[in-house]
Image (tube, rainbow, N blue to C red; front, side, top):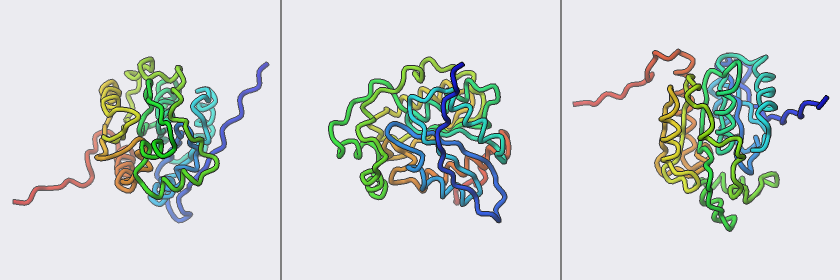
Length: 247
């Protein structure tokens, strides 16, 4: 009998003790990344009372193992459970949402990976493709656990988005994508969004591939919080703040 694969370790950012937890986000990183890369986002969401668990997963991890991880986190989770992912992690989150017997309450997809990626021949070119944020560029450059050159590797064939039964994912999905993403064209995100019954697509102006860690990461994180708050309130609730035009 084959032993089950070891679960990926997780990095967690939890709400302060005096905050009532409003929900749980399980995040899967993309090519070359690890869970710690999302510390900035984790701290920001936890400040708004959402628990964030970022997995040290890889693109090649089998979905059964990742599903076990989600189940383990979900066993003690409070509030809605949301799967999130960037790059290949976005594809993993979609695949899990489509396959799980107990689907999550929502999915957040950021800078999803595409097939036929153009390799970046230098570290400077990879940084340019990933992010325009100087702080995050320094973080990646100094990170000995980050695997450079990974964007040149194609996503696993099992995650091919064309084969995912996206029409089965009837739960709310937030897609975030930079309009200047040189790795995955915005048209790909629009195509995926069109196949999802309950999708919301947010295009980030000037955004690169790592849209959660790009120059406008604060605005993107704020939009994530607003979407999470609407998710908690049910499908019939619209925007909380409505901007009116003054005459």
